[in-house]
Length: 318
Image (cartoon, rainbow, N blue to C red; front, side, top):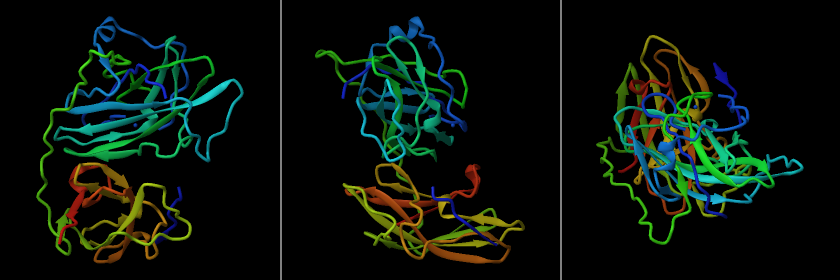
């Protein structure tokens, strides 16, 4: 049965709290604003700064930029006495266990310790809610609306929505004498099937048939400056006993640097349909992705559930 696919600067000090494991690293409703954030003595002694990489329990994060004021997106609704700020972050997974990146779990802390929830959709380029596996990472912006007189001083990322801080790190504007803390990590090179090869698991099969690079966008999907559209023709067959839900939203692209990208819905003609796929049935169609102009596609993942064992991944090399 068919289903309808939903359409969906100043350098400041930052607090960062991240999660590892199967739970969210960055998780469903945004937390309400609270009066103060707990600031531990341990945090005050960290001496890490904007641009440093911070690692814990197989997860890493870096705050790359603070935009104050931020460039508002089309969904931003201004409020009197407040301004929009945004923080660009990168979150990665070095562990063998999947976790989820989610902007809902990233709150901003001002210099007075007040915590501000994200205002999702308020800035273009927001970091995606997305599951990442070992060697993968996500990058994007998290926007906030804060009082005009407040100074952005931190981020905190909890393990779950409404969860307690998992990992808190202080980040001050780096002094001239500071040596940036770089990430020491060699991404494992995945061994992947080539275009046209069938990938099987859990009674299902998945094939990446063709790569279109660049792809021609539809009229409803204007390209953003600095990006290009690519598309992959895929085929999914259900050989299992249960009905399998297939949707373009269940596909993720990975590039050769490990960055992950969610599908861009309705971006290319011939998009794979959202359907309940019965046993013995097969469907094929295109899935499109917006990626930076200089990125190189490496693989595509079909992720019909949150369980890692349900994921099927195919390479995009000939």
